[in-house]
Every structure is written in structure tokens, then in C-alpha cells.
Image (cartoon, rainbow, N blue to C red; front, top):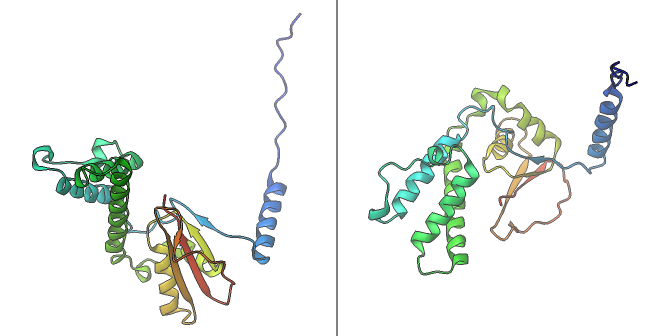
Length: 214
């Protein structure tokens, strides 16, 4: 006869020992110069006046309205609403739309290339404009993760478009460490970095920020 008794619950596993080992391994890797941070979305979310999705979508919407012929131009295009907040889909539409209506007689590949370059330029310009409003000294506590990042690493990789890492580098140069230098590398549409990536020896406080955008 089958038993109706409940099976004993799986014993609770204390992960403290495993966690401590992971932390120890991370510290050892950093001390050996083998730890490289790769910063992604969300790292700058707690910084006030940073770029918002809505403001960027509004800029893309305005750019599309300028590119479209008058007979196809909507009176009030809102990409954020049209794509229900899905940023990737909205940007893909922008690339397609810009290439389609500014290079009508070109190949599909050329249209995509033209649309992608316009998107990249628009993103860079938008973040450049917004960086003028970032003031670390006004809310330095919100920037602590950036300060720790720049203080601990000489090479930083990121997929983020914003300039907050560079802003912190400049802040440290002006207020705490005049000997610090930094350089930014951006990826091109072919995936290569500009200037070309070269392995860099950590020589004191020279920070290299490598920005990959796909």
C-alpha cells in the first residue's frame, strides 16, 4: 500500500562557506591582476539626472519625423508608447526607418549601415548633452560604486553608453588625484575598438575604459 506520509524536506544548505570562497577567489584574482570588470545596464541607475529612456525615445521620435516624407509623417510620433517601452524594438525600427527613407535607392545592407550610424550618433549626442547636467559634487554618495570601480581597476569594460565612468575619472583628476589619466575606446559597427585595442600594462593610475556597443 502506498504511504501518504510526506517526504522529509531537503535539509537547509548554508551557503556562507561557498560565498566566502567565491569572495576569496575574487580578491586573489584582483591581487594577481586577473580580474576585469564588465559593467552593464543598471550600474548608473541611482544617479539623478542621468539619461532616461523616455527622453531618449522622444529624441529618436523627433529624428524620425524629420526623416519621413511629409505624406508619411505622423503628427505626434511616440516610440516609447508605440513599442510599449521595448527599447530594442524601438531602436531597430529607428534603424530601419532612417535607412529606408534617407537611402531609398541603396541596398538593404547600405540602408542598415546608414540607419545604424545615425542611431549611434544620436545616442552619443544624447549622452553628451545629458552629461552637462551630471554633478558628482552635488550628490557624491550616489557615485560611490563608480569611485570604487575606478579606484580598483585600470581596465574597465562596459556596454553602457553613458559617460558616468569617465565623469568619475575626471572628478578624481580634478579633486583627488592629479596624477590619474584615463582614455576611452569605443567600438565601431564592425565590432572593433577605436582607437584599436592594445593590451595595456597597469602603470600606476592610468585607467582605460573600453565601450562595446552592438
